[in-house]
Amino acid sequence: MTSGYADQCSCRRMRAHQPSTLCADQYTFAENGKQVRYAPRQQEETRAIVLDDCVFNDNEMRCDGLFLWWQVRGGRKVAALVELKGAGDISHGFEQLAHVRSQRPEYREMVSSLGKDVPGGPALERAVIVTSGQMTKPERVRLETQYGIRVRVITHSVPTRPVPDLRDEF
Image 1: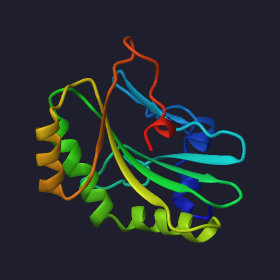
Image 2 (image 1 turned 120 degrees about the vertical axis):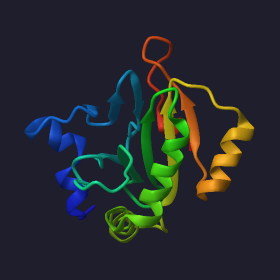
Image 3 (image 1 turned 90 degrees about the vertical axis):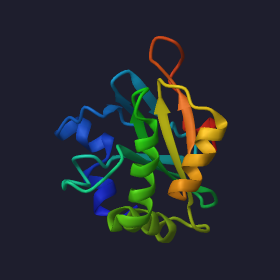
Protein backbone atom coordinates (compact mmCIF):
# COMPACT_ATOMS: atom_id res chain seq x y z
CA MET A 1 0.00 0.00 0.00
CA THR A 2 1.51 3.31 -1.05
CA SER A 3 -1.33 5.68 -0.17
CA GLY A 4 0.01 8.42 2.10
CA TYR A 5 -3.24 8.41 4.06
CA ALA A 6 -2.88 4.70 4.80
CA ASP A 7 0.55 5.26 6.29
CA GLN A 8 0.07 8.59 8.03
CA CYS A 9 -3.26 7.77 9.69
CA SER A 10 -2.85 4.05 10.39
CA CYS A 11 -3.46 2.89 13.95
CA ARG A 12 -0.05 1.20 13.85
CA ARG A 13 1.70 4.53 13.30
CA MET A 14 -0.64 6.69 15.36
CA ARG A 15 -0.31 4.52 18.45
CA ALA A 16 3.46 4.96 18.28
CA HIS A 17 3.67 8.66 17.36
CA GLN A 18 0.41 10.49 17.92
CA PRO A 19 -2.20 8.58 19.93
CA SER A 20 -5.74 8.51 18.59
CA THR A 21 -8.71 7.85 20.81
CA LEU A 22 -10.17 5.67 18.03
CA CYS A 23 -7.29 3.15 17.96
CA ALA A 24 -7.50 0.53 20.70
CA ASP A 25 -4.61 -1.32 19.03
CA GLN A 26 -3.21 -1.59 15.51
CA TYR A 27 -6.20 -3.66 14.31
CA THR A 28 -9.04 -2.37 16.54
CA PHE A 29 -11.24 0.71 16.56
CA ALA A 30 -12.99 1.61 19.85
CA GLU A 31 -15.23 4.51 20.84
CA ASN A 32 -17.70 4.98 23.69
CA GLY A 33 -17.98 1.27 24.49
CA LYS A 34 -18.23 0.07 20.88
CA GLN A 35 -15.34 -1.87 19.34
CA VAL A 36 -14.54 -3.68 16.12
CA ARG A 37 -11.39 -5.28 14.74
CA TYR A 38 -10.06 -6.80 11.53
CA ALA A 39 -7.26 -9.14 12.59
CA PRO A 40 -5.01 -10.56 9.88
CA ARG A 41 -3.96 -14.18 9.75
CA GLN A 42 -0.81 -15.65 8.25
CA GLN A 43 -0.11 -14.26 4.75
CA GLU A 44 -2.58 -11.40 5.27
CA GLU A 45 -2.19 -7.69 5.99
CA THR A 46 -4.57 -5.21 7.61
CA ARG A 47 -4.40 -1.43 7.94
CA ALA A 48 -6.77 0.27 10.35
CA ILE A 49 -6.96 3.89 9.16
CA VAL A 50 -8.43 6.74 11.20
CA LEU A 51 -10.62 8.87 8.93
CA ASP A 52 -12.28 11.21 11.45
CA ASP A 53 -9.81 13.99 12.39
CA CYS A 54 -6.86 12.44 10.55
CA VAL A 55 -7.55 11.73 6.86
CA PHE A 56 -10.55 14.09 7.05
CA ASN A 57 -9.80 17.34 8.91
CA ASP A 58 -12.63 19.44 7.55
CA ASN A 59 -16.27 19.99 8.50
CA GLU A 60 -17.60 17.75 5.73
CA MET A 61 -19.48 14.60 6.70
CA ARG A 62 -17.30 11.57 7.47
CA CYS A 63 -17.23 8.23 9.23
CA ASP A 64 -14.80 7.00 11.89
CA GLY A 65 -12.43 4.62 10.16
CA LEU A 66 -11.47 2.33 7.33
CA PHE A 67 -10.01 -1.16 7.37
CA LEU A 68 -7.93 -2.16 4.36
CA TRP A 69 -7.30 -5.93 4.31
CA TRP A 70 -5.59 -8.10 1.72
CA GLN A 71 -3.94 -11.43 1.11
CA VAL A 72 -0.19 -10.94 0.72
CA ARG A 73 0.17 -13.11 -2.39
CA GLY A 74 -2.80 -11.55 -4.14
CA GLY A 75 -6.39 -12.60 -4.21
CA ARG A 76 -9.06 -11.16 -1.95
CA LYS A 77 -8.99 -7.52 -0.84
CA VAL A 78 -11.51 -5.66 1.31
CA ALA A 79 -12.01 -1.96 2.03
CA ALA A 80 -14.44 -1.69 4.96
CA LEU A 81 -15.74 1.69 6.10
CA VAL A 82 -16.62 1.76 9.81
CA GLU A 83 -18.90 3.95 11.92
CA LEU A 84 -19.17 3.38 15.67
CA LYS A 85 -22.59 4.68 16.75
CA GLY A 86 -24.66 5.15 19.86
CA ALA A 87 -28.09 3.59 20.14
CA GLY A 88 -30.08 6.64 19.07
CA ASP A 89 -28.18 7.79 16.01
CA ILE A 90 -27.91 4.75 13.75
CA SER A 91 -29.64 6.34 10.74
CA HIS A 92 -27.06 9.15 10.66
CA GLY A 93 -24.37 6.47 10.35
CA PHE A 94 -25.87 5.31 7.04
CA GLU A 95 -25.67 8.87 5.74
CA GLN A 96 -22.05 9.24 6.89
CA LEU A 97 -20.93 5.98 5.28
CA ALA A 98 -22.72 6.75 2.01
CA HIS A 99 -21.21 10.24 1.88
CA VAL A 100 -17.65 8.99 2.39
CA ARG A 101 -18.05 6.27 -0.21
CA SER A 102 -19.55 8.54 -2.87
CA GLN A 103 -18.18 12.02 -2.13
CA ARG A 104 -14.74 11.78 -0.52
CA PRO A 105 -11.84 11.56 -3.02
CA GLU A 106 -9.44 10.54 -0.24
CA TYR A 107 -11.43 7.34 0.26
CA ARG A 108 -11.48 6.62 -3.47
CA GLU A 109 -7.70 7.15 -3.58
CA MET A 110 -7.08 4.61 -0.81
CA VAL A 111 -9.35 1.99 -2.40
CA SER A 112 -7.76 2.60 -5.79
CA SER A 113 -4.29 2.27 -4.29
CA LEU A 114 -5.25 -1.06 -2.71
CA GLY A 115 -6.52 -2.21 -6.11
CA LYS A 116 -3.32 -1.19 -7.92
CA ASP A 117 -0.62 -1.94 -5.35
CA VAL A 118 -1.75 -5.41 -4.34
CA PRO A 119 -1.99 -8.25 -6.90
CA GLY A 120 -5.47 -9.50 -7.74
CA GLY A 121 -8.69 -7.81 -8.73
CA PRO A 122 -10.38 -4.76 -7.27
CA ALA A 123 -11.15 -4.56 -3.55
CA LEU A 124 -14.59 -5.50 -2.25
CA GLU A 125 -16.09 -2.37 -0.70
CA ARG A 126 -18.06 -2.87 2.51
CA ALA A 127 -19.64 -0.63 5.13
CA VAL A 128 -20.26 -1.42 8.80
CA ILE A 129 -22.01 0.27 11.71
CA VAL A 130 -21.16 -1.03 15.16
CA THR A 131 -23.79 0.08 17.65
CA SER A 132 -25.25 -0.69 21.04
CA GLY A 133 -28.71 -0.02 19.58
CA GLN A 134 -31.14 -2.31 17.81
CA MET A 135 -32.41 -2.01 14.25
CA THR A 136 -35.12 -3.99 12.53
CA LYS A 137 -34.47 -5.48 9.11
CA PRO A 138 -37.18 -3.32 7.45
CA GLU A 139 -35.58 -0.18 8.93
CA ARG A 140 -32.11 -1.24 7.72
CA VAL A 141 -33.46 -1.97 4.23
CA ARG A 142 -35.25 1.41 4.15
CA LEU A 143 -32.04 3.25 5.10
CA GLU A 144 -29.95 1.26 2.61
CA THR A 145 -32.41 2.22 -0.13
CA GLN A 146 -32.55 5.85 0.98
CA TYR A 147 -28.76 6.30 1.04
CA GLY A 148 -27.83 3.82 -1.71
CA ILE A 149 -25.41 1.78 0.37
CA ARG A 150 -25.48 -1.75 1.82
CA VAL A 151 -24.50 -1.69 5.50
CA ARG A 152 -23.74 -4.50 7.92
CA VAL A 153 -25.12 -3.47 11.33
CA ILE A 154 -23.36 -5.18 14.24
CA THR A 155 -24.72 -4.85 17.75
CA HIS A 156 -21.90 -4.63 20.26
CA SER A 157 -21.36 -3.29 23.75
CA VAL A 158 -18.06 -3.99 25.50
CA PRO A 159 -19.37 -5.76 28.62
CA THR A 160 -21.72 -8.09 26.73
CA ARG A 161 -19.60 -9.79 24.04
CA PRO A 162 -16.09 -10.25 22.67
CA VAL A 163 -14.94 -7.64 20.17
CA PRO A 164 -16.45 -8.45 16.73
CA ASP A 165 -13.89 -9.32 14.07
CA LEU A 166 -14.91 -8.18 10.58
CA ARG A 167 -13.11 -11.12 9.00
CA ASP A 168 -16.08 -13.18 10.28
CA GLU A 169 -18.57 -10.79 8.63
CA PHE A 170 -17.35 -10.75 5.02
